[in-house]
Amino acid sequence: MPIPAPQGGDAICRAPRGVDNACGISQKGPFLKYFATSLRQLAIFAFLAGASACTAATQPAPVVSGESTGTSHAAAFVNVRAIILVRHADVDIDAKKKQGDATPLLPKGEARAEDLAFALRDAGITRVLTTQTVRTESTATVAVAGKLPVESPFKHGADAADVMDYLSGHTNTNDVVLLVENHGTIKGLLRAMGYPDESLIDERTDFNRCYVVLPDVRTHQYRVLRLRYEGAWGE
Image 1 (cartoon, one colour):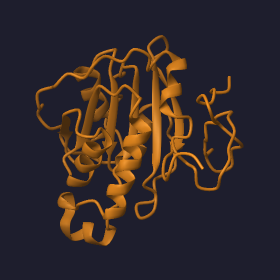
Image 2 (cartoon, one colour; image 1 turned 135 degrees about the vertical axis):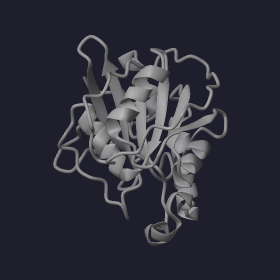
Image 3 (tube, rainbow, N blue to C red; image 1 turned 180 degrees about the horizontal axis):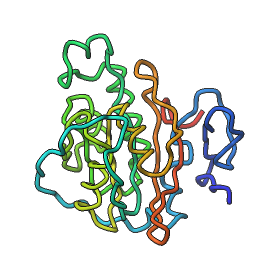
């Protein structure tokens, strides 16, 4: 069923390459890529409706580091309302080779994180989790406008199945989780969710992918919306 557009205008969706209007909604404007469905409309799935108010969580022990694009074992099912999975915003990839986990966001990345904050503002996020890197933590902090605590339980390169196990054991069914990750781990997470053929994110250029993951507790499977966000809202 097509996702309805917000009142007063069309929702904009950028379909994956080779797929015509995958979201079933109208597309207009060459650069309007803002969450295109507008996360406010995800309430129709009854996953994001009535998300509970945020609660602070204690900092857990880090997950053991592993192969970033793989999984070491079958991951536990994560029974939450939704997981919003994004990569950190723009960084200097050449500088990252020297600075490692301390690499900060570029000014362009800070602006993109602000775009993400607008796109997420009505999503009902209750938990924010990232890897232990400056770029993911900074993106997450801006994305929720500092209104939620940013938890960083995962080492950079943590095994995707370990990340899923952590989410399964440290979240509840009412949570809407914003998970800000590094590009390699995202592919591993999608594989753990049953999507092994997801393309690897281009490290240098691809900073605006967003995956809205909707767990189905009846089947222990996940539905995934592939979206992009960027730029000004409206024309």
